[in-house]
Amino acid sequence: MPINISPPLSPARYTPLPLSAVSPTPGGWMHSQLTAQLHGLCGKKWLGGGPYPGHVENSSWVGGAGYDGLEEAYTYWLNGALPLSILLQDDDNGGLLLEEIEYGIDYVFDMARENDGWLGPKINDSPWSSFRFCTAITTYIDAFDSTPTGAAADITTDPKRTKRAKRAVLAMFQHASSLLDYLKSFPLAPGSWEHARWVELLEAYGFLMSSKHWSASDQGQQDVVINLLTVAQQQGFDWLAWLESNESNPFVNSSDSSIRGWFPSNTADSDAIGENRWLPTVDRQWTHGVNLAQALQVYALLYRLDSTNDTTWLDRGRDAFDRVMDLHGQSTGVFTADENLAGREANRGTETCAVVELMNSAFNSFSISGDVRYLDQVELVAYNALPAAFFNGTMWSLNYYQQVNKIDAMQYPPNCEDDARPCQYCFGLLFECCVSNHVQGWPKFVMRQVQISAEGHVAITQYFSAHTTRSIELSDGTTIGSLRVATEYPFSQMIAIEINNVSQEFVLELRIPGWCGDARIELDGRMMPETVSRGTMHALKIPAGSHGISLLLPMKIRIERRPPNLPFPGVAVPTNAATILRGPLVYAMPREYVLDVGMVFDNEDSNSPVGQAQG
Image (tube, rainbow, N blue to C red; front, side, top):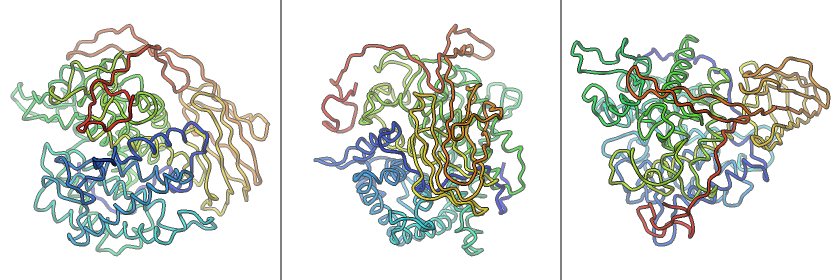
């Protein structure tokens, strides 16, 4: 699998605007979701305050006592809380949260200076949480590494933040050197989290290699990063060979018929792997839902680093996505993962961490490949699976496993890992991973709404009320004073787009979902005569001046028959089931519910608001 990494990178089809350039519009549904996060688990740093330190505050990453063998809470939380705090600068709590985040970041950098550049603690000799920190800190660099031309005084013009962003770049280079030395002595161990999640290094350092800081760095720094990614590929799990394996093309090849080793195509084999019954040849880490969701972007990331512009990487990546969804997919756009792959059965769960990691991988795969199907999948997951994790929208507790066809939030098999752990299916605060990691879902969805294509077009990839915070400057010299999207989507089929003070003609690309066959576009009240094809980024020429665009995406009710379940090898069982959809929304049967707060699923009592559903 290892490729020869040799910059320059192969080109990405789209690049999101900098994080601080787009903001959700107050009063809009998306703004309300982000605000709920800010005032819920995320903003409270996972229920800190009172007699108990929050899990984030108590992390050894920021000088706390620590609490588990991974210390994942802080880096998971940072990856979502950081962009959230920047997106919600219209809320005083957003500004306070950003300041608290910066205090923690400075602590991490100060400690790294005393530890040969190593970022964070070495937890049980595992470097994985440092991978996630690097991924998270790229959003700070993206937002603050330079002052935008003509920007009004705001958080992006603060020279202290620009200085901190430059410090973050240097910290990533220094950590690369320290981590490379570590991996030479302590290789990524098979079966470990870092062995499965090495792809995060491609995401984090791929960002650095595509930024202006790469050309400004010296050859020695560049060589260290390239060597680090090469070693990570060599030592890390071979996701490509695994995802492309089957019984005829096994990942583990042996003359002993009892030794199995290929990607599972049915529930029985999936469960056997999840229960470690295929050891020693197959490890459950290979079908762990979060590991897999993170890894699905590996093809797109390797395409960029390959430098040969070999688009077969992208074809293989699309095939891998499709294969996982065909064999294990659910109506809401996710695959089963409770905690491991579990087939097509609608009563099998999906961990909330896998939901947000899948969104991230699909978005990155779109930006690099330009394949609009990834955006359709992101949208389906975002508007169905992500909200399903929360009981009532307050984001004070969440469901560790969600299921498409489970009618309660009570505990009974199938369970994951240790059956003695309470209520994986209940609403509560069971495992620190999802309680922290869910935060990245909405902020990263918002920050990638507006992107610039390789041709210099402005592309709107998702629809919710938002606006640019400063002018957009294209490579050909075109300046767009402002862009605003106003809509009740996904509950409405109308999207209004307002563009002001355009200096010269440019091309605007609008995503037409694959489910919409009769979209219509008006420019300044005039119906556009061009054919609008489903599943495309539709190009529309916008003249100089100020203009209004109306996009109609008719949402017809559609019924999609569910494929048969695959309980055992070679066995297909018809389900006679169907999914009812309108636009991107999956319909559900309304049900009364009983609110049970008799048991609190958290490791500290009284850590939840009164009346919040917990069991």
